Image (spheres, rainbow, N blue to C red):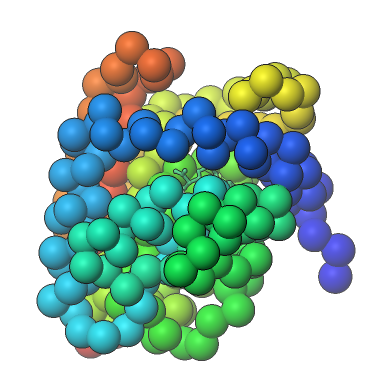
Length: 217
Ligand SMILES: C[S@@+](CC[C@H](N)C(=O)[O-])C[C@H]1O[C@@H](n2cnc3c(N)ncnc32)[C@H](O)[C@@H]1O
């Protein structure tokens, strides 16, 4: 079956910007202590969950995958954009990166101890998020953890230009309460949420959500 238009637009846009995105974002985490704290909390939680790997879904150029690995997590990346996967493999040749979509992951049931989706659900139309969160629930082992980062708000913004290129991409700013409700509806327990005020590089507040697949259920 052909991919829906939003997936085609997302893939094409990130294929176009991949190299410049990687360059511009390479050291971004160093200036974001709250982001690092959320990733460190997630890493501590999944390290306690045993040996199954963690997927960084919508990994882009792999910087978050590599950061998770530096925290002692056995992480690999998955991304829709072949160019992003190429950049990630070139930058981190010792790490694993696969092409794939979060709406239909090529992973077995309960295959993962954790999932990070770091600013990658922001291009999925909100009415498609139940399907994505159901897929996250399927591939997480009971007790496995999910960390989401996204832009907090309630609007769709059209991006026609980014990272020095003409593109055509929708960005959805999402209400944290609504995301929490959808995550719960997929069968995951939400156990922490954080709203961070924007820094000078950002256009609005940033949201983080930690959830867990119940050990029984
Ligand atoms: C804003 S970038 C974030 C990349 C990376 N997480 C980071 O923080 O550097 C969004 C990424 O999500 C990927 N993406 C968007 N929708 C996706 C989907 N349905 N499945 C897999 N990857 C997706 C895009 O290709 C892009 O690389």
